[in-house]
Image (cartoon, rainbow, N blue to C red; front, side, top):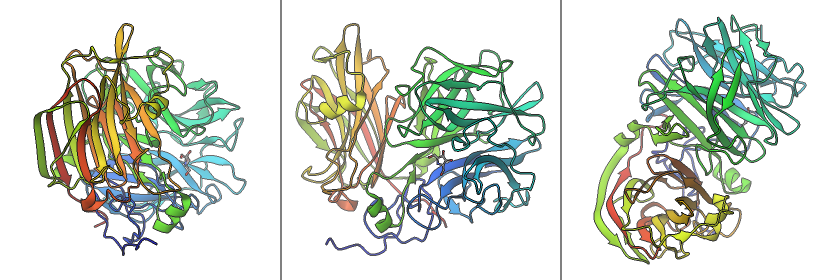
Length: 552
Ligand code: DQQ
């Protein structure tokens, strides 16, 4: 029986919020602050200089249940303080659970929360809550007036009717919001309108729906600026605007989004035909990333995306360690100049945690070579940015057009399978002799009239732990032209999570891994090349990451 470490003081740069005592036995994600039960963010918002994160939380255990809205606040998105739960079952309209929802800042700068309550008949109802005391800068207490519920599941499946979005205002004098649902196997986003935010009327037809997609959880709907990286207020409207509709697919536990047009006179959203509207659609993150929520940060004119990564270990592991679920690092989110997808990047404030730095420049990696990155940095808690270049694409392997499933392809052509151009990339959370590692890498293929770039974050070799781990070969294709014969990668490495951003945030992958050797000071970071074509590390910068104030 491995000696269980004593209580570990939480080390964390990942913005996870301690949801119970600072005790953590076991090595999993020491610095990923624990959340008992499933920790799904819900209702994030910026208000009067304070960032608020509300999240689904089980105060009674490390498995889903007894769900309340836990509440943490921050002035800088890096240092956080956990407060008392904001909303918890207490009224007939939410006595069996306070499920996901969203925050809306009303005119006069008044926040209001819309959330799904579960009543004694297990029906999913839409309720609201408002701060008890607007002069409390932390909005610690929220009240749920007795004119709740605002929306009953009339004419819809009462066990598939949840997760109201942030509401937006249209110049016809109505507020609007969406509620996720399904009818049989058709995923649906119902639209509701209201003049006073109290009386809501269901629109004749959903804003959008899609056959063969199943239940749409946690819908998110927002405008995106046609150019630049700034975010827009959810109620922003203007000519030729593009919108994003994201849904979390209860059946696949992945999410997908589309970019499209919103016709507010008809209350219809029509996705552009530039990506798939369905399970094979674009994802914010091709790894462990679910029930995401965005919010508009008015203080810096940006839209921020919070993602939830559940555990890939067993329920027994979670009960043993006393927590389950982490928040990924908040990301800025904006429309790619190509207008066809979104780009994401860790919020800039994260860089304030950068400590000791190690650099590699102009290092050539021949086929089969690797190089250790800065033995002086904490490879288990690091931020690494690297740009690779290659002299030619001539050696790129042929691409079979049937290879449409990136994860399956990564499972077959992993980091140890020799390639033409690639596989090359990083070996993260690596033990010294590479008994354990999580490679994050690219492999370039030659298709008839273009090149195809596969990005992988492969957990197959991440841990020697014999049982109870889910170790997928997460992967996504990267829509990037290779004219400059370069590919960039950033990985945020954090004990049991590796968040990677390919090609400047075009393709992102989050992996949850549980190494047994590659932990703390025994973790190493390498760059590698297993392709026949030589690859050069133009520049690599790696930083140890310091711990923020968590729940100070
Ligand atoms: N989890 C919440 C629901 C939501 C789901 C309940 C997302 O509101 O649909 O805890 O994982």
